[in-house]
Length: 624
Image (cartoon, rainbow, N blue to C red):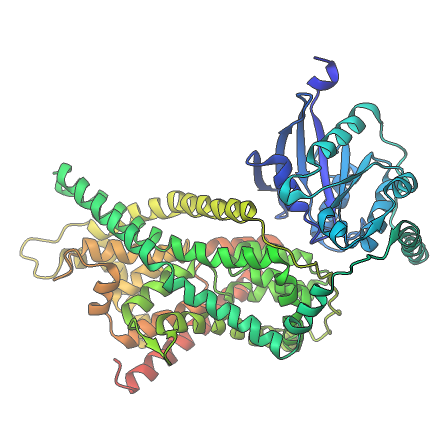
């Protein structure tokens, strides 16, 4: 074995958005990858490892997408600094792999010319080459390679074609070439125009128009991007998604619920100590189980999102929403962070870094938590299951799914209204025009979808173990101690710390219809929204509600809460700032406590206002 084989190499993947860069990263590294953040910033760092045919270990870094080294956002700045070897704490790559969509080389050629100026060895990977071949696209690979001074490899990442050749070419460069002189610098306006002209010259010289153009993309876009039909189709897709959240998830949820009931009963047979039995069965199993039961619904939401992203439709959705968002004073690029916030507000806030202008970025950050994140799903589905009957309306719509859809839409509309007010109150400068590249349509990669779903399962289980489990122990302690005095006539939990705290808070929340159990659930729920469900599960389990033996938490709430209180609780969670971690990330992103404080105050005020309106309206209708 040679010395070169023993020395590991470092590759960095660079490319425009929507070129299949992440799919190529997955094809190279498989399961040997991890996701973290770059030191000192919240930009995501995806790193993986592969072993070349020679036995050499190769470390692969997937850098944020960029159109140019002329960075205009924090994400692009990270990519630029890593490529230039200027990022503190990051070892410079030995070889850069410039990933391109083979069917659309016009924009990537300018980036390739910049990489040539950097002087670091690079390979141009023409991804999705099978689509280019089907279209009859003619690319002079030898001529283009000669002009760029870099080898070119054709790949189909989703089918792992060309991967071995790409690794071999990169490894050869790492072994035999040394970095050249870095002549790249921040370009002037004249140099930018020259770079555009040079990229166009290369494209004309070495890329011939396709013999069989992709007319299907144009035909589909004529419908999906239509200002009326397109929005109706987008609304229908979202409607179907939230109908599926209830229709598809019910069997799996019933199974998980039955499993935890069985585990609780089994453990209860062997744990005879009354206090230990209460901790394990009523505290841990009831608390954690009441949250994990909603995992199928969360996975269904992510399943739809991943399909839309992989198919190329998500960029069309952003295009459709641009006019609506522009009317609210939002930049078109805000669509992606706000969409990410439907998974979790934290990556949504971090994704706002792709927005160039400070005011546009701040506006997006301030409304991101109003989007209905996955942590709200356990709260929504619990209350909907308890308060809204399971029936069909208009012959085909699930009423519970319709309510869930309405809650999601409420979050979106309220976010747009708040954005409009923020732009009118704090700053009135118009947003820059929105420009983006629309990728070609393609079939989603099943392995990529499954891998991402599995990662979501891992993240949810990690959250359950790291946050929910310790909090459930705390809630159990608060709900159990101190013991009631001799001769006490009220339920034991009324004399506990939880009862004391709940009763102390309840007068503040009485105008919006919250009882003391609802009030106490809000306290641990500040750590993570879904913890409120686990807290309710523990409080009612420890409280030994009359007639609740063996009943689900939803059934218990249906008997203990009025419909007015349930609707108030839903309204509260549409707006409430019930996540300390999000406030912490906003503090990091804005470099101070001013904007997190503004966010907390306005969201708390909206939560109280709309919960009050929901409760009073419901009471006036006789639902109290």
